[in-house]
Image (cartoon, rainbow, N blue to C red; front, side, top):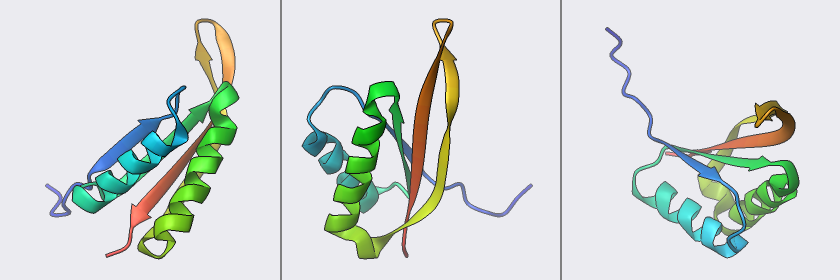
Length: 92
């Protein structure tokens, strides 16, 4: 058994809600219990994921670090859809 504690990961999949709602959700998650948040934008929402990342860094940039950035494509309903996943880790 591993003695490492599991880190809390909060996934945020961007949709059609205003970006400010996702920003508030991300900041609240980081302040409460999430050690890592993963921002994911698919298809037309890729640019919104990057905009959300920039907004988070402008607000609380000194309290988070970029853990990982992943780009690729996935099959959704037999179609390839591009995505970006940005993982931000809370600084302790």
